[in-house]
Length: 119
Image (cartoon, rainbow, N blue to C red; front, side, top):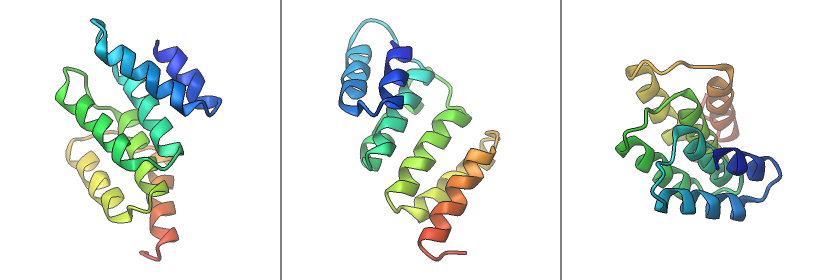
């Protein structure tokens, strides 16, 4: 199902992606980091940073491990939502938790800071 969520994300079918993720979360199967990160990315694309943060919180509370992909998905959602301060807080958390920082990470941080004049 995570492949289906990712496919929906890539084709901008965000409503279907969130519905699939909801079905996965409610089923007996555990939603995994990939599926959750894809759902977070979908939320970010449509400017639903609150929903992205909620999904990230669910992932953090589950037995799944937070990874660079899930953090970057939330960073992008915050960046698109104009939440530059949250972007910086999450970057700090990533550093503290020794999460790998990638070019995607830095692009989201720089973009958020540039958009809102916080160099």
